[in-house]
Amino acid sequence: MKDTVYIIGHKNPDSDSICSALAYAEYKNGTGDIDAIPVRLGDINRETKFILNYFGIEEPQIMETVRLSVEDLNFDNIAPVNPEISLRMALNLMSKNNVNSLPVIDENEQLVGIVTVSDIVQSYIDVWDNSILGKSGTSTDNIIDTLSAESIVLPDNIKPFDGKLLILAMEPSTLKDYIEDNDIVICGDRKDIQEAAMDNNISLMIVTGNGKLDNKLIKIAEDKGIAIISTPHDTFTASRLITQSLPVGYVMTTDDLVVFSLDDLVDDVKVQMSQTRYRSYPVINHENKVIGSISRYHLISSMKKKVILVDHNERSQSIDGLEEAEILEIIDHHRVADVFTGSPIYFRNEPVGSTCTIVGSIMFENGRRPSKKIAGILAAGIISDTLLFRSPTSTNTDRIILERLARIADLDVEQFAMDMFKAGTSLTGKTPQELLNQDFKAFTINDNKIGISQVYTMDPESLKDMKRDLIALMEEKAHEHEYSIFILMLTDIFHQASEMIVVGQNKDYAAKAFNEVLQNNSFYAPGVLSRKKQVVPPITNILSEIDNIV
Image (cartoon, rainbow, N blue to C red; front, side, top):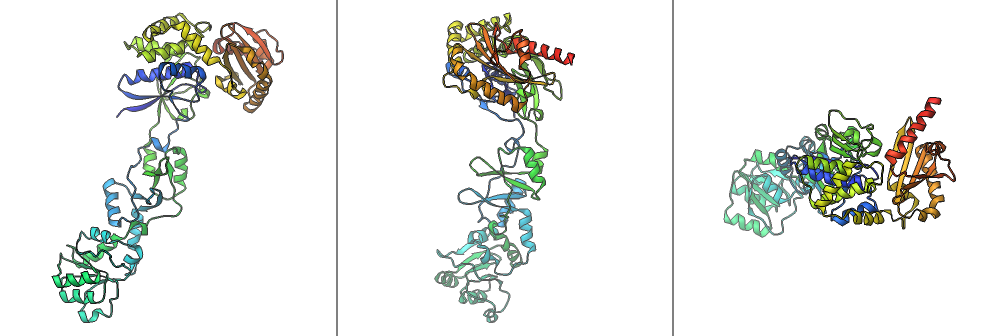
């Protein structure tokens, strides 16, 4: 069985993050060793939607955490039972499936109780009176199955089993002192006893030792609506086994049930299990239907989720629960940050303009030719992250890999880039909240928390009317998350410049890093296109200088 590995880009994913995850998943699946699944950590932006629609590729599934959930465990997939099945059948099912409990459901497949080995054992310890079959609602089918019996007479309308259970070990003349209407009797093949019992209007006769009835008695039984069955067991065995015909609904636990869903995190499950005494617990799906059961053993034997990180290696930008996952590889083109691993991994970090460049290189180095669609999205990722080589992060390697991918994808790079940037930089209908979240990354520099959002546009003037609201929301977020500097880069792709809107207690230092002065919380930065290469380094330098002075 192949291991499932999730290929994960960063939060607030851009085109490079999504495209590299999709492409690297295809590459890893081609090795045949794993089942690689590309995932995203947030909504995709307009540019990425354009890319995926253009090449006819579905967006990756969203994933919120890599913490283990119940769905990830190899829990018991035993089918639930209905309340009418016998205790004996329940025991057989438990033994067959090596479990100690069974979930019980109603006709709508909703959980109504749990029957455990302990419930059944307790039912034998309890002192039942001899009217237990009637009280429990035991069916004829349950009695026949439990006693391995065959029917001799089964009336269409069987009398209710609301009488006593009797073993007829007395003379016919004394029966009348014990037997009453609708009683259930166990007897041997003595005809006088059988006939005397029928005269007292019993509801069911169980004949032991494969005993038979003559035609006269069968006719009497049919006329009076008395059920007659024959079991191969002797009287002692039959009397001992018959209580196992009780329906599980009579002994099952129905109060204070603890149920887990597929989405429940294992950490939360452990806490709940530690506070309860049950040995196993039902598992329900998204339709509240029981699909199995889980026990403490399954938690002990659980494995970590396996992940490969692309386009990031910083915990704050990665998926929730990363510390509980097993990181297999990292493919990135950013600075080396703070992701820790428990053992050596394949870590490929190159100073190029796009992670898609690295993924394309890996494919070509290993003799793999990407499909036309994958070559297309890799090319799009490179165009996006390098701003078609206008970004200072661009390298000759990016150009070489893009040219090769474009030939495979049969792509007019210049025309595609123009169409893609137009689709991606349209700000029509965008709210301040959406703009700030569209491409946001957080950094920690010398104990200072820095937040930087970047918005690419071909029409920066369209944001003038929104600027006041943007600044107000930025100040709110800076206060909430304790960002000493929070920057919104409004990047004009074709004029190759950015307007830097800045808030935070150290906002003036952000402007000073570019030898500028803030005016109305902003300054103009010609030639500044790259957050990673042109914004983070000078801010790091200015904050380091301040710390040294202090």
